[in-house]
Image (cartoon, rainbow, N blue to C red):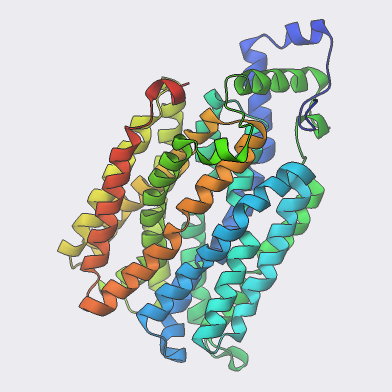
Length: 442
């Protein structure tokens, strides 16, 4: 059966012209320029709406008299909604096309994110966080799946690392922006700064949701900005890449694939570290001695600046050496070291150094992880497999802030939570070596 994402057949002459390495390199550069910056911008908007609760916490907890446990539970409950709806979301995307479905996701979550201005009780906070997870379910795995329509495994690590640079970019831009909003708009029109934060940071997602409908293509065959020769090259490479991949024939075979459960376990540990950093970074910086929300926001940008340097370097190295496991495990161990050292320090400068090490390691790990499952799965199997791995692993997004919040309340310190994160990330790095190298090092 012909895939809706494949390019139409072209003549033998066109295919032979595409055999030139220079032509191939230019074609992929053209695809990267067209897709990756826009997708990064969309994910940046998504990540702002997902994690700005970490900055809102600096004012919201005292205004609403929420405990650390209430905050941790609300921050994490987002991922329960994410878990329940992620696989269906990716299957729908594969069926109806990325353009319409990604636009639906962004428009829905923009509205829900803005609705946080109405939070007055833990119950409303929990409900809106859950609905935000439902709304956003499928965006990141949907984009990862979308990348498989354009890039073969050998070129995907660099593409994914560039896409995931949106996470540190969200920190670089979102940290100072969130601090500025809360610092400057506190009390304007009798509204708290944290409410302005939720309202204003929902606007980019609203605009980008409309832009997706006008800009994005569902696949190679729909790309009017490509020539027939370029389409033939891209389609041939993707088809050749998919030829060796698993195509599950039944739900039982899919669920029984031990590789998927191993991938989910590894990524669970990565996500524990990622959201341990994201949801508690502003709090850690404030406890190190920074009181003003504006300066908290400025200081949070520094670890993300380090991460934005690390991501493309690790991705390019992984593609150059066709090696995936070490390029995932080593950054995870570096991140674990950063988390483990933090409790031993007290000064702002020392805390920023350790946070920068942790951020560079864990965010490089987050992008490099996806080189593993996308090297194994293709087609509808990739749609379900990527979403399944991501949704199960993202339950860590629930457990990480909930457990860290509980440990912080229990001990009165952040030490226990950081050690817990460090141990989990180290365990995940060890699990990486259970993945057969020959199946992913392409």
